[in-house]
Image (cartoon, rainbow, N blue to C red; front, side, top):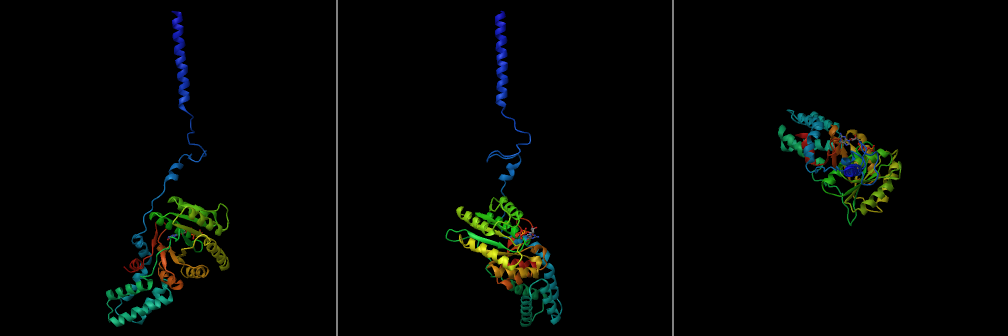
Length: 366
Ligand SMILES: Nc1nc2c(ncn2[C@@H]2O[C@H](COP(=O)(O)OP(=O)(O)OP(=O)(O)O)[C@@H](O)[C@H]2O)c(=O)[nH]1
């Protein structure tokens, strides 16, 4: 009896010990409450980081964007439109009125040549068509302004290359005009069109500039080629970007350049070198000069200097949402003989629109 009791006691004790050992073994290692302070291998993620890594935005297409952004263009430029229409609604369109019309156009940065031509064309039509009816004159103004902005100008962007090369887009302009922002916004447009692209951070003056570009790229899953060294040779970063772009068979490589240059000789050296070095790998298909629309005459001077240094193929006019001087579109095209291809109408990621002459004139006058 005693032996049986002892045996049962031993069995119960054995089961209890075995159960305890199994419970400890099966529980596994305990993770720290706030996650591990650093990653241990490539697939490991720090707590809270997993979402940031996997969230890639799908930006909207750029088609019809000027229509969405028209309100902003109207808001900043409707004083010009209203001023012109008030003048042209006067009972008598005498020389004083025409002088005031010309002054209003000049104030909106249209430039002296285009302002004079526009007034002459209107005067001629009023005389020939023999009417001063405000609605009719408004229609004439609409048509003549549109003619001067260039309704048939080819404003297509050359973003893709030929013969197996990627398209190479250089984005140039002085600092602060919105270059990096424009590259970021344009990258979104291309991603929306299912294009494969790569960014090159050739603005090596500030590490923050490359960070800013990379942030734009990361949001839409686009890689940025950059140098970790401040002040690295911009041409070599651009070259690496093109090489990588070719290896990955992307459609386009977009290069953001620095504008912080002291003088024309420095600018010429740097942009010239970037272009030369890049073209060892693939031809440059588009050189976009970014101009801040709020800088008026200063922007025009910058445009001239850049156009003497590099062959500009398109203008991006930024901050048109904050400028009442939309006439700069005409002045700059006239001065450089290069079309405005894109306009920036806000700080939002999708506030960049293809420039459309009719939409622009409608926004100012209607
Ligand atoms: N309102 C408005 N702001 C804009 C537009 N485009 C750019 N900006 C703002 O302009 C500022 C300068 O833009 P960046 O892209 O950093 O200019 P950047 O030319 O690259 O300047 P650096 O890197 O210093 O050479 C930023 O605050 C942008 O948000 C626009 O179309 N409208």
